[in-house]
Length: 100
Image (cartoon, rainbow, N blue to C red; front, side, top):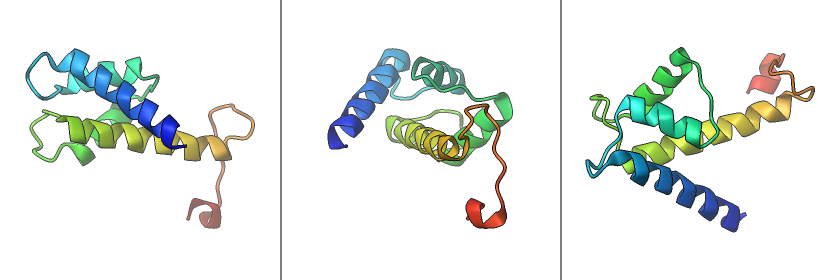
């Protein structure tokens, strides 16, 4: 599991490095592009909610540590969602106990 995590983090860092162009941060447009390159697809409301949660400065400039946090969160959310989406149709039904 450590090897998989290390590989994931290297990939995330590589995508960040490609898009930050020496600035040390990604714009929100860059973050969206980076997430797509990493295989994540979020609609606009979900994307902006996630970015708002992790952009500590609230200036739309996402640093590497914030970007890694975003990617780990989205990957974890995907994994959790997939465990409930047993039919792989992109829809789940949960009762409160399952949600908790």
